[in-house]
Amino acid sequence: MTNRLRLQADSGTIVLMLELLLVLGSLVGLCVIALITVVLTPQIMIELGLWVLAGGLLVGIPTGLWYHVVLYKQLAPRMTLPPRWWRAPVELHPLLTLQEFRRVRPWFVAGAAGFVLCCIGGLAAIAGLVVINFYS
Image 1 (tube, rainbow, N blue to C red):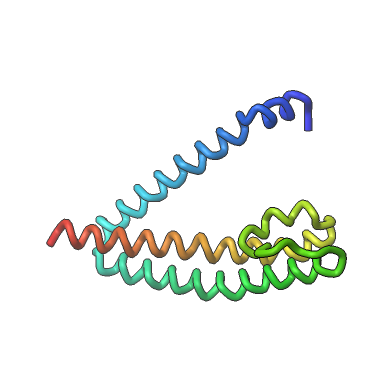
Image 2: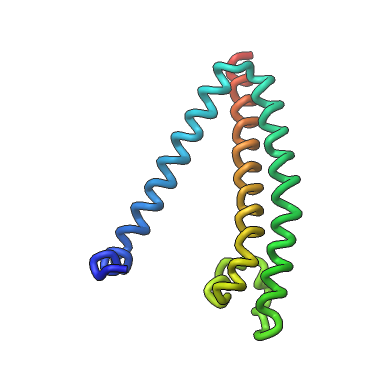
């Protein structure tokens, strides 16, 4: 990392910009979901949202569980894990070697993808319910 980038990262500028992009991206995504809900019938959007949510649960729960198991298997032989480590397991990632992280990362990403699907499906179903509520 260059000195200029390091200074920006230390000052929080890059972190702030990433958070701003996440917020703007979320707002745009919410607007797109609302627009799709109005274009499609709200009943279809509710059903589609619930199917996406169910798919997210189907993917996210087993992979998230296995991510915790793999993370535990990588760290437990060489250290005692802190109490309630499973509540914030990402904080343990810096303790992993590169090879250990490569074993953990696919499960971490798959669990995160399931979580994102749950959020999108839930928002889509809620958007459909809100539109039905306003138009009836």
